Image 1: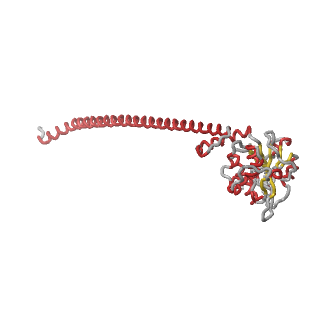
Image 2: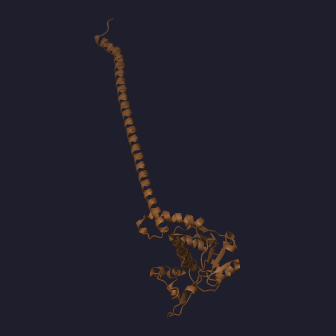
Image 3: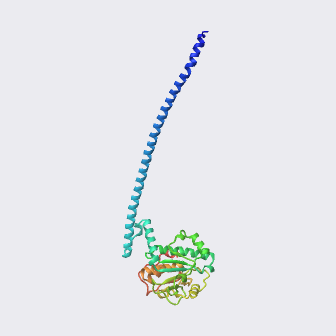
Length: 327
């Protein structure tokens, strides 16, 4: 029986639909492939751009690094020239103004001199074995004196090789030095819990004490000079001399009686007892000038009631108010 025309038309549409769907899917697939190709192309271009940018950044970074290195080398050469010029001038005795040199140059020179002092400098120990009999206030004052002593040594043209002996790391003085003195742990000096006799033979040691009979005439590179690290507000007599006797070492005093005389004052006060840093400043100046008159005139505090004698008086300038206040 013949099919109804409407049903026949629907049957034909049903047969055609799968073919049309397949064609449409093929078209969509081609479009997707094209889109992927475009995306891949864009990605490749993006990667190339990033590579170029990375290369540019690397080139710039290397260039900046090279420029910094070049500038640092120029600065180093300039500082080296300044350092050599300063050393030549000071070795020849010419006056030089440190202000004309950079802080970095002066710091490098100071470091070189302190390092050289460890092998060629005069040796000086501060005996810190007597701190047990000191009050906390006296300990604090001694820590300040050690800071000033080290500061003077840093400024010296020919610094001493410094030793802090009998310095206990668990002791009050050590803790106070670390607390009060910035950079104490990096000071260019030797610190040890051993005594001076553990480091040097007794024949080479000269213990400086105001109670010694013999005056110190000169400083000898073969000797080791020892200062008693003591602040005694109760004025106990002969503590440092007793310590030297205990060690069985040679003693000497600064030649105060030989170059100075008592000066009348309202309080009638006269004292030869000096702080550790004051004794060191006198020794340091004498080692550089060879003149006790100049050393004592510069650093012996005016408040102690002594002045340079007329026989020893020279044209050397007296200690400035600033120097006296620092004592």
